[in-house]
Image 1: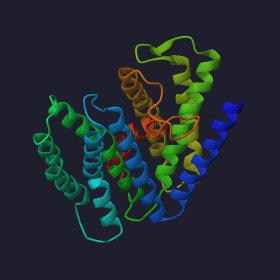
Image 2: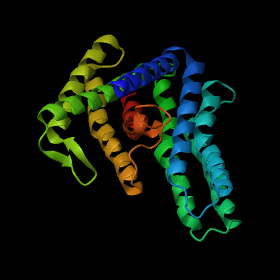
Image 3: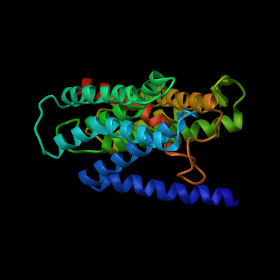
Image 4: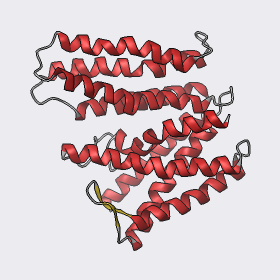
Length: 279
């Protein structure tokens, strides 16, 4: 009971903070996801620490990788706050990121690591896996040229719906393992339950957010159930390879930041690509 109350309390605070950032306007939104991006990157780099590294060396590498990984997100923040203008904001953000990414190579050049390219690879994987998807999230917030978090809030609701429904259905009637090598507890029955309930929620969202067609909400729902579920499995693969249960302990009863956003991170690029095509 104590564990359940702790999990419930953390969940209430988490949802309140997320809603405040999503519904509070452009500044709270950009600040919220800057913090989330930073937290997820910091956590990821903590998980990929080289045991032969000193604590000071590891902290230096984490800070450098974190700062470079935030560049695309922060550049797009500047564009959307009109600090500078860009007609091709995403392309410019990527071009700015590339030369700075090579600073990671130069940093390792002056270190004494026996596996420098492993560390460089881990740093860049963090950028691809976390930094760039959260940068692309801003495309969803400004998808029609004005600031609107309807799609992002909808995707989060669909992600939570899919996760919860898959867990509840799977715990009741789940018998057929979905991917036993990575996540033994996930079942096909739970997954299909998540699909059906998530698509039902997509239809309900189309009734509230009428600026987006029903068919588009249903496709976004499919993106959530497919790529969100795969994202959950990818993070499970990471944790299994490291022999850990949670990615961190920042959220009592819920694990770390990556544990909460694993599915959402993975689906962002696919949702953003669809919304850009939809526009």
